[in-house]
Amino acid sequence: MADRHVSADKDVPALLAPVLHRAESVIATQALLISPISELFPRLRWGIIEANAQWIPYVLNDVRERYLRRGKEMPQDILTAKNVYVACQNRDDVPYIISRAGDDCLLIGTDYGHTDTSSDVDAITQFQQRMDLSEPPRSRLSRIRSPSSRARQH
Image (cartoon, rainbow, N blue to C red; front, side, top):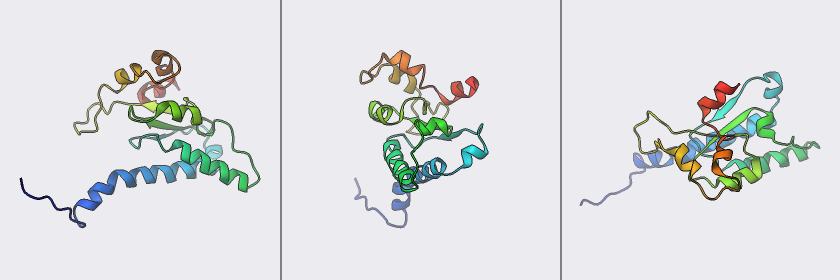
């Protein structure tokens, strides 16, 4: 097998792409939560997809500090109050995320139709079988739905 050398010109951008995508999602979510855009467009829903959800507690802590610096209190359940929904993945620490953000702001999807290695067509079944959730997984799944089922609900 030939030696594999990482090229800064070619490989580093490809290696950083997933990290940069998450960074963009974090920045966009922070901006949505501290801006008045949800008051201007109260029926508009925002979906943060394919960036996992593990970063939500960080964003909520940061946004809470920004509200406090303005002499305001951050609204309870701010993500759902501002119609921001984040797609979680089975590898996320979902119980921790739920403990910090609640579960009404979470979505789960399968990437069905994609043929890349991140596709997880069994995501919902895997989620139902998780043993690390405090409630039976089926009742939790009734609240953490696929984006398509949540869209049909509204």
